[in-house]
Length: 219
Image (cartoon, rainbow, N blue to C red; front, top):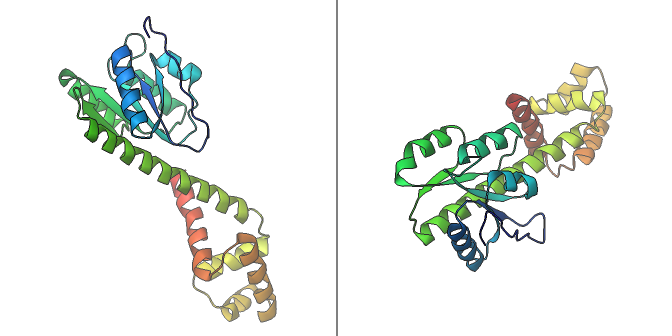
């Protein structure tokens, strides 16, 4: 299609990884779409950064293949807008040989990779799959942290105190002494805590509590 107009090919499931392609070159968009679809990778194509932000759903797993040089909104400007919106979609830049310094600067700003034109199809597919895998892993980690924080919020103040002491390596007897409670009371608190956290083992419980510490260190 010509004249800066594209047809958007949307995927069926919001959990299905999708590659979003933004390139003003009609032939490049078509070639990338054919290549990715032939490899079984869901793909959407956009002719400009403005079209991309107006139409694309950015909260899905996948990655973005982004041309460095485009009229209107450049690839670097698209990347900057993604950062402003806190979108963590991995970005793979497509570059000409003269654009390498720009691509290196983009990677300093968080881009995942850059690929020179003309590119090797198998190499591009390998890098795309790697970016998708990393993004899917990060999303799973994010979902797990969110679920753990939600469960922690259901604990009572006393259960939180017991949890902190359990993570500190204290036995039930030591926790009972520290909190001025009976051994049986601590056992009950611990049982309720394990149930609320859906923690099959003590090791799972400790790991969940440490996830909270890791989340706090990121903020």
